[in-house]
Amino acid sequence: MNKPLKAIAYLSASIGLVDSIYLTWIKLANQEAYCAGIGDCEVVNTSRYSEIGGIPIALLGIGAYLAILIVLFLQDQDNVIGNNSSLILFAITLTGVLYSAYLTYVEIAVIYAICPFCVVSAIVMVILFVVTLVHMYGEGSRPSFAEE
Image 1 (cartoon, rainbow, N blue to C red):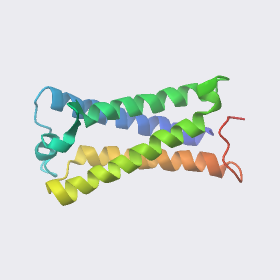
Image 2 (image 1 turned 180 degrees about the vertical axis):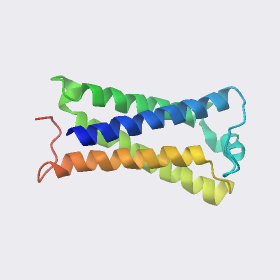
Image 3 (image 1 turned 135 degrees about the vertical axis):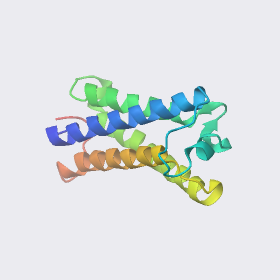
């Protein structure tokens, strides 16, 4: 991955990680999110859609963003992760975008409340997905799943 794309990916994943850590903290500590009058974080964060099997969705976000950062860090290594980094990033970010789209739908159509922090995470995941696609298709005519 070229330097500008890698910088965008690192910055985006770091923003997503901080965002997810904050959302996890407010969920686990039973705190109210500071939404500055934009949206209704409390309604979203206390809804039944804010966790899966008792695990906060934001905690899954921490895992996803950490995995992305680890793959980015190991991308230039000659190992299983480094050699398949594009495919791994594609899988993680595609899953993240699809799940973020579902959660955004739930916020709008089911809960009738928007959490700006959730929107930030969704936007960050879209940015990471686009960066992954640009890397895969922009640096050649076909996807390459191994770094050259």
